[in-house]
Length: 264
Image (cartoon, rainbow, N blue to C red; front, side, top):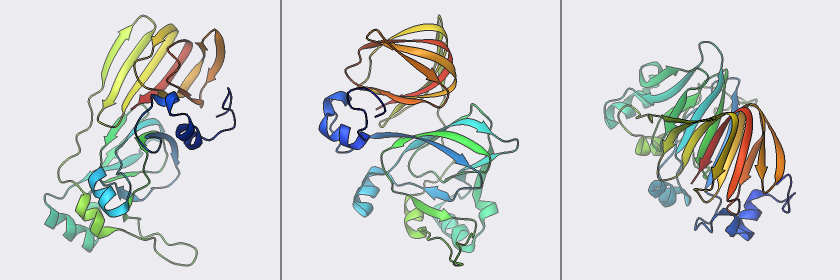
């Protein structure tokens, strides 16, 4: 934490010792993470297992995630799904290295959003800056790494059998964002599932909020403004990330800014 009475503490320690700040949630580790990923080259093609497979094979939960595209170079692409019609075809194309036939590449631009549930083949392409919201898990199976080698000439480890086990068949079903406008706030529900809810808030002016979740993770992706909490004012600007804990019941945000907001 960068300020307040818990300044200097790390989030995992704070969650373990002060669960009341997060609605006394039952999860043993902080259940929701956000990341900023800046891809200067293709990241590896991956898949994550669901909770049942992750617990059985890795001893931790699986991972469902989602991506908000903050910025993207012209012509930038992601891998989002695959072309195989069944597990047999999937195995054959992976083992034969028929990646151009197998991988589904999708062009992206700033403002796009992609829901990436467990079992989805995915990769982030070069020239893309994204905000990722995910279950708190590190379990990742690498399917393909573009045959890159390290300084010693070694290929990176792949996890083909487990990947084939967990990959889903069929085109990924992206979420359908829903937008509601009220006075100075345009609120877009990007996705809602069993693990997290993610919104985009666009604020022009002043908006008052009332707590409706255990806590909120907030990232400022554009603009400047300020947030008022209990008669205290905090400046907001692009690139800031903060948590509104459970004991914050009301707050107001003013300015001209865009936020990505998530909660369990």
